[in-house]
Length: 409
Ligand code: RNT
Ligand code: ZN
Image (cartoon, rainbow, N blue to C red; front, side):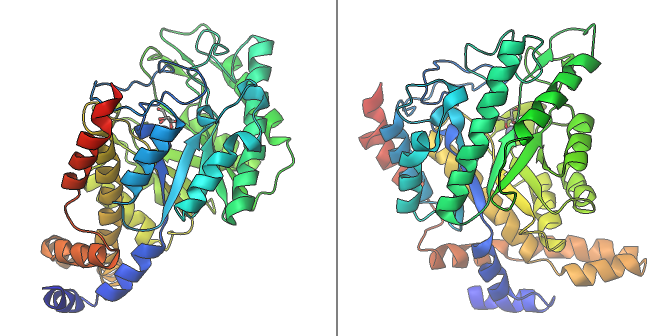
């Protein structure tokens, strides 16, 4: 079947072998926080900051050992090049507060990631689920002690990110997202943003190697309980990033439903060397549903592949579903991302671009429809086979659930 599929694609000038080879080289950064409903390991017992995990499926990882075991199992069912995306709240055995975290609190993660032969670790300061989040504010807080605490936390995170990059020899994306905002009509929209700007300036005053650490800022339109105003808006961060030579992170759950990250990627590629992504699935709002093979995911993958941007666009997953088996959520989302990339790698982009440039829009539409029917699934299965994996992954997860997860309640 694969040989047949190969021929069908070859009719369009597409080399399936090349697609499979390329797919293997594109890293996807997988979030640790799907495993424990974003609770972390540093003392929090609930989630805050305008994000929410819903569902009560048994088996949540309750400590470092359980989380590692789940990651190990889930990652073993994922094809391709993998990175681990950590939040600072996953510090191991820290007796100091978040403003004083050091590389050593993450050394056990490095050891683990090396065991799994991962490509590297990405990182996120955690500005939620902590008593110093005064009135839900962090880097934009009018309370100087609060603001300073979180500035120090982010500086610590830059140092930890640099440590990861050194350990793995690949750059670490350090993404700053804050939940700061207001539920109702603010009396002042500018001052919080000026304070955020000042905080970012202070954070970036840390000496760090820009080749090792890619500092990114993640905007958002609104959060639960902060519906009226978000300090870190899209315009704010894009301008900040452009002026300060850092990176923008686009989370496709963070825009109005008719704004598309697939369209934002090429806009940013016109100006930036690096664009970071949080791939999620928003259902009506930033609901962080498991990533599935949907049209927008395919469009995002197309923009990465056809613009030769597989090195420039840093792909990370960001969702959390507690209503289904958490390992299955992980694997399903990661495989959907990989499959979308394969889909994009199997498109005759040069031919289609030529049709567009020649204004042959009838032919363009027809060909774009035609290639939708090409046997992606067969090439996907061949890829899985070569990665030592089977198409079906649920039976293994169900066994793990019966043997390991069931014991956890
Ligand atoms: C929240 C942002 C943010 C978080 C993670 C846990 O809306 O998307 O990226 O989901 O940092
Ligand atoms: Zn995100």
